[in-house]
Picture (cartoon, rainbow, N blue to C red):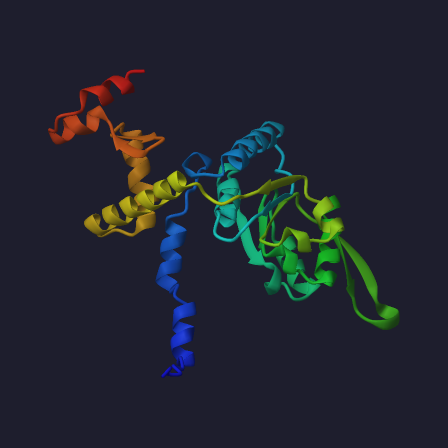
Length: 265
């Protein structure tokens, strides 16, 4: 005899919405801030390095960039890394959050020279908002109407040169006119098992050190780690962060001879 088990709506909601505010803050603090720290997506990262270097040499903002692929593969992280590498500010929003063209006016007019506007789920922009953003992407200007009836006037507003980074999990839903206005396209694919291990290991190490020192994870990443790197006590390797021979000597520990020889070359 089968029993009909009814799930409580409250319980189902708890199961779906598992990420708390603390989880969100922790995830943000664990995001890599530099391209060299980003794990996986080798092809996209290599091409992105070229684009960043070219933009920096020209002393111009990067071309508008579209990041597509399944969710959870680093599109948001890459957008923040680009902003950090270009030493500029990033403003993040999402397609569903921009309901009217007026919502976009405030965002665009507050962007500085070279700033980045990151729109997640860009395929969910309304048609009105999408058409409004075309001249902003092409000529860095927007037209908006003030007053109504016979007193209506169209005002052209010049914007600072900015970079729009769009992220989408449904590239097929983007209209051709919007897609054509992006100069750079990157598709992010699923991670290899080895890359997933690196990501999990790095996050676990940071959280472990954070708990030991009773400091926030972002403090470890932004303050403690850079100091140790500058002091020559820590080094970046393909396997993650490792202590140098100087660090072993400082702590009075024996350093592996083979590792010591690798540091010399």
